Image (cartoon, rainbow, N blue to C red):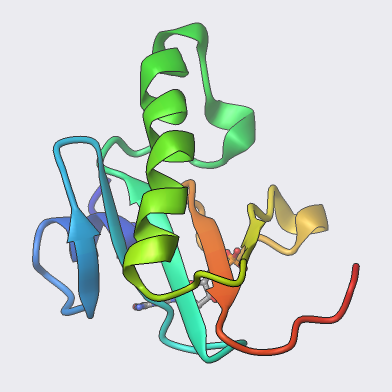
Length: 111
Ligand code: DGP
């Protein structure tokens, strides 16, 4: 999807501060951080949001869930972190390529 910002980051068209990558996903620093450490984890496959997942994505989403804690630890978030996936306009989603925010490195208010 050529007009997707995150697909452009995946293909190198837009630079990003990439902290992790593998065959299924990529993690990079959010351009507008809301915490001392604010990462976005995205699948290489263009899926708009959690709502766009199908049964065929079971392995991919499971891989991402298992990888998020590894990335968090790699980035020094040993005390914990918050993981958020905004879904749809009503959920505050602005970029329509599935992503998980990882936030940490400071005090996070209880939700
Ligand atoms: P969301 O509201 O969940 O769709 O969050 C999208 C996030 O993406 C938002 O926190 C800012 C971030 N973002 C948008 N454009 C770029 C970009 O070009 N580079 C990076 N690194 N982050 C971006």
